[in-house]
Amino acid sequence: MSADAEALERCIAVGGVAVLPTDTVYGIACDPDNRFAVERLYLLKRRPPQKPSAVMFFDLSLALSALPELGPRTRAALPRLLPGPLSVLLPNPGLRFRLACGDDPSTLGLRVPRSERLGAVKWPVLQSSANRAGGPDPHRLEDVPELLRASADLVIDGGELPGTPSTVVDLRRYEDEAEWSIARAGAVAEDELVAVLGR
View (cartoon, rainbow, N blue to C red):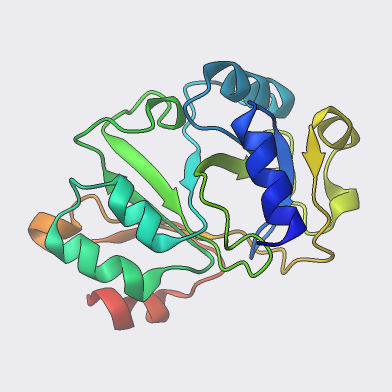
C-alpha cells in the first residue's frame, strides 16, 4: 500500500476530512457514516445538506459487496463501466450510506476512480469536488480554495489532473427496464456508454 493510501485510511478512520486527487478533478472526502465529518465537509464546501454526494470506493469488488441489493443486470454492467471517470446513480432500497444521499435516500451515487496511488484504500468515502458549491472544478491543487486546503486534515498532491468532471449516468431504471440516461455530461462520452449499456 502506498504512503498516500495509508495516510488516507488513517485520516478517514479518525473522522478526518481529506483533499485528494481522483482521475478527473480534486475531491474532498470523509467517512460517509460519520455525521460530524460529513457536516464539516458540507460546511467547508458551503453545500446544502439536502444535496447528495457520491460514495467513492477505490476497489469495485468492495463496492459490489457493500451493495448486495443490486440486481444482476446492474451488477453485470458495473465492471464494464468502472473503475473510471464515471459516477452512477443507483437504486438504494437498503437505504445505505444515508448521509451521502441528501434528501433522496432511495438513490445512491457511486464512484470508483481509476487510481494507482489510492487503489489499495479499503475505506469507502463520501466524496465531492474540492470547491465551493457551484465553483469551478479544481484540476490542480492550487485551484482548491485555500480555506479547504487549510481546513483539511490531509492534503494529497496528485499534480495536474485532467480537469473534466465525471460523467453522471442514471441507472435507477436499468435493472427493470434496461433504461439509462446521462444526468451530467463529463469525461465519458455517450457513445462509450451506448457500447456498454445499449440504447
